[in-house]
Image 1 (cartoon, rainbow, N blue to C red):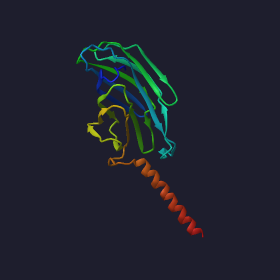
Image 2 (cartoon, rainbow, N blue to C red):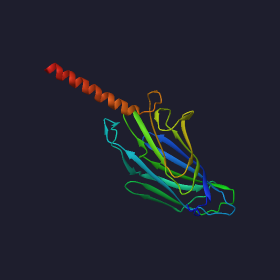
Image 3 (cartoon, rainbow, N blue to C red):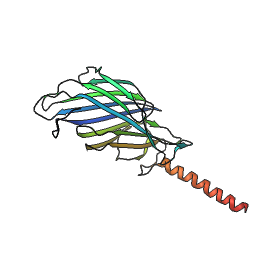
Image 4 (cartoon, rainbow, N blue to C red):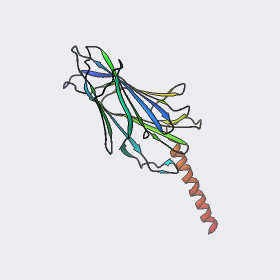
Length: 230
């Protein structure tokens, strides 16, 4: 969205993302509240949401470290509306190899000091990375041409347990919540891992730990067989 050179015209007062997971399918709702911070009315114009994911090679459903690559996400059922319920029809989705872009037109004037919220919804099978014991989700809020004052990601993971998170986690009933303030030029990448096992939330991925343990056990067994055969 446009801004005058050297002058902040608008800010994202709130950038809230809700992820509802049903097996491998996720329904994502983004509620973006824009505030006019100057003394003249503004028309935001085009806004963009860019979506990508990291995909890793895996063995038996366990991700292999350092094999990640970035690619765009396939999405469907894309819709947009304003906080008064009016539907936005000026919306276009572009899917490329490394990024998927949702472009929406926000042509409603925002008065001085006032805020308006736009709601974007879509469905995707690409956001959940399935494993044998653990699933993981990576969601990235990209840098914006206007500052993001407050961002929040909440995930309904059907009562499962978060065993790793790249950012501090809060919990409300079955919903996990992550927050970040003052996102300007850098992206906020949130990655978390979850499963049915009630494991503690640690600063490393349990799936990678199991991967290391499995190969460690195989290595020890192979060494003992080699010693036995000598």
